[in-house]
Amino acid sequence: MSKNTRDWEQEYTDRCLDFLDRPHEQLRHAVISCLVSQHAPGEMIDLGCGRGHQLLWLRPEDVTRYIAVDLSPTALSRLPHSAIPVETVVSSIEDYHPPARDFGAIVCAEALYFLDDPVGPLQRISRETRSAKALILSLVVPNERKPNWRKRVDFVWNAVERSGLPRLDRVRVESSAAGIAWDVGIYRLDRNGNDQPRDAP
Image (cartoon, rainbow, N blue to C red; front, top):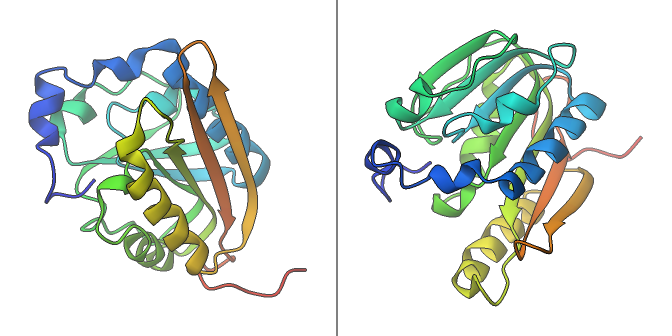
């Protein structure tokens, strides 16, 4: 998450983001886990991961290592226990540099709203890996309860589409009871982590 916006460390320290523990908030994590299993098994980078809710939904047979990246040391100290090996990195998305290893998925869920450039850092990160299979993004669907989100959500998706990344799938998951939904998109990266579009097979 951008180091230039909110004080994320203070928000996690004050437990302002504990609403993310609610059951309906887990829906997008389940979808992301399925997409990782189907398209991008291997090591995983979770950018702006917060307290690592995604980790609870991942299977060791799909994810061999989970790299948790967040600005908040407090959030990272509260990651759930898992059979999957975990690395933690205190960093903004913009400043993060991945290890030169082979990765399955690079995930960024509910964090791109806060970046002035939502695509550039992701492209750079994918290039700095030795290889990466897929980029997975999740954003809330604006509604009448969250009208102020529309501008930022549209800004992010439009930037992603302009990047030319080949989209493998896009899934909408919704809780009618909670009145909230998310769009989860998965984009192909070539075997060298290249984020440039290429001809479809």
